[in-house]
Length: 367
Image (tube, rainbow, N blue to C red; front, side, top):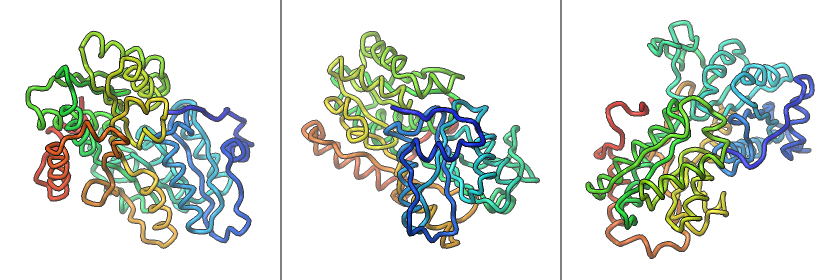
């Protein structure tokens, strides 16, 4: 999910170098008791997407409470998670933000081990722990994380809702009757939820539309989210072989390759997580809209709430009901959006708010 990543450094100097590499700087008038640090998703920080917008929210939150800019680190893979978090702890950081679903296990362990450090996990929910507050590999989830880990809050999003909305858009603008969704990996529930919502939304708008769902990989996180070449190849295949003329990407930087494939073939594309017309201008000619999580706002508000002492431990859900999700503006492609679609999008959003519309199947988040 990146256009650039930070170099790996020795643990003893990791924090200081990470600050410099990301352009972080001390705020001369900082008065807050909080020392904030952020661990991005694997291999990426400035991805113009999930990691970067979470980072922007952390910087805003730090400024709001008078704290210094957050230190950052970019793990090269999952083997770095525990040691990178521990490096922050050892350096005295007392508010640590970790940004990725698969970082939840190590964040849970760190929260239990370091009760005096506050942790915010982005996309790490629902938190699953046993009766002792340990991460539960069996997924029985018998423990209450809000009570057992009062220093850990997870921000999660109902991705099926924005997925549903852009599915409606895709079904309304396709000319071939085939739309496609590309997920980075099958084992991350948020990725799956996006695509499940996308399919349901497309079918709700037009029951006859064909929805082609494909995943880049089932196990390789780097390929899933940091391989735009692979994304472009898969996108091109969906266009040439499945005849899809609207492509929705849920694969970070790999997905940016999907957007590139759509533009190269002169078909439509839909971005993910943030407004990719703004964040990935290479694909502006073909991006119609994006399925948004309001990431920056969620992280900023969580940091402010921590400072005020009002942030609730456990799971904090962001969805249509609290303006935690949405779709991006159409950026000059409004001519594609019919009055009928606008009305149905508004009705669907209201249905999500009042609970009258189902946007995910029974096995939500599971392939």
